[in-house]
Length: 163
Image (tube, helix red, strand yellow):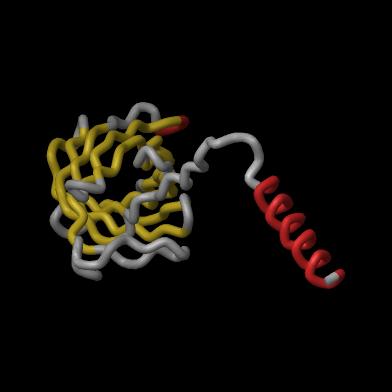
């Protein structure tokens, strides 16, 4: 009899202890917002204040919220801008880019937004520092294919082909 009473009181203590872990608040814990998968190849146009409208291709890779890539301009990709960007959960994809000219490497700020429903990256760029006399512009690029990001998150398959 003594053993049965001990087991019942131990079970009751365990139930009370576990229910106490829940706390007095009924607030639900919201899951963290997920980052979009912006990896892959893009094509579109870039409208530069000096050079006019040019064909553009972009390749991006990402690890977590850090994104890097190369933006190639013109039919032959004669001009390229190396990009270092940060992606946030509102799908802002901002950072900087560098273009090597004949005399100096020019830095640009890059601001844009990724639309995960349309698979597009739209934004603008503007020169800074010693290259402030160069012009800026806008771009509209459509993601053609995607790769898995270098992280644990994955985008559902079949939305875009793998690159």
